[in-house]
Amino acid sequence: MFRKSDFFIISAVLLSFIISGYLWFVLKDREQAIFTAIWVPSILSFGIYFKLCFLLGRKT
Image (cartoon, rainbow, N blue to C red):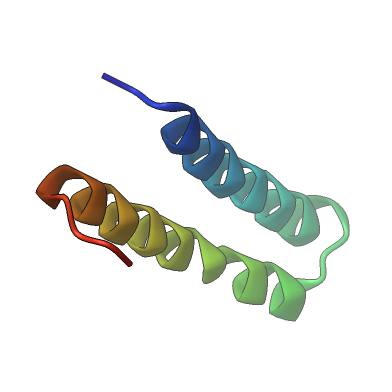
């Protein structure tokens, strides 16, 4: 069900989320935390696009 690329995308999203939380709560750097948090939906969208391309058999 899950491929190696799926775990890579999920780990990238999780890493971005953790870094964003660290910047927000520990370092109190609000601007960098928000900037890093914006990556989460971008990475997920990127992963969903390539997953759909794989499932539909299209070349990217």
